[in-house]
Image (cartoon, rainbow, N blue to C red; front, side, top):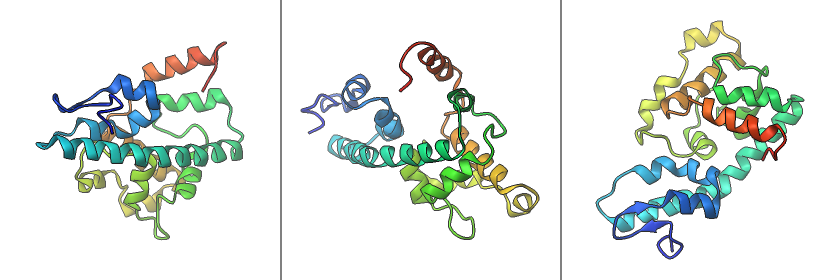
Length: 186
């Protein structure tokens, strides 16, 4: 299926990023970008894993945006405030925005432990398939006790983004800003 659509080249064992972006959009491609860059000896396995990720993205990206939009509305967030997040600021600009999102996406259990499968649903496969490595992002209990819950949740999220090389948002920010100044935003 993925070869027929031109998304995957069977002979070269390579995903066609531009075709996926053109057909499905950047959000679905970005959700699966690490899955597309993993190497597999078997081309069929590689294609299957990528297709499975695209199907997951098709379902989960919509839910993630829905949760985010609910929180944006709840927090009465302006577009200019939201654009500040492209920089992945150290401190949260909109108080408890991520906490709102984390609650809706069920990223934490009742004891504030990560529900890893929900982080994966919300943000896609991580750069490193070994989820144990992502555990470095969890703020230690001693520090959590001295911090506001919104602050440590946002710190953990920001670490997740750094872990996945997503923290250089300056180019995306400038593009989004140009679009918002006279062009369509989304």
